[in-house]
Length: 54
Image 1 (tube, rainbow, N blue to C red):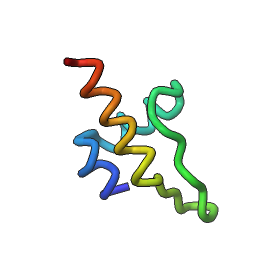
Image 2: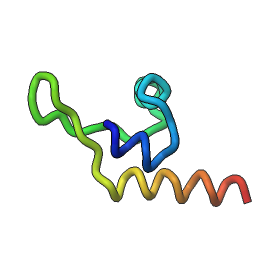
Image 3: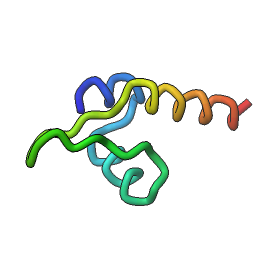
Image 4: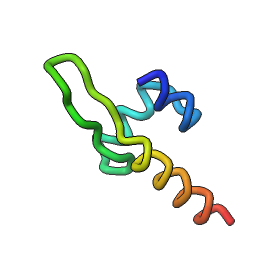
């Protein structure tokens, strides 16, 4: 999660909220307590946000 927060510039709680609303890529669940995001999914999300702001 720390890497995803650093890459997106968002806090953990905000990412969780966005995922629940379907506004951020869903993570991959690796175990009961471990989730990770595909870097490509997060980068694509960021690119879409930048394009929408332009």
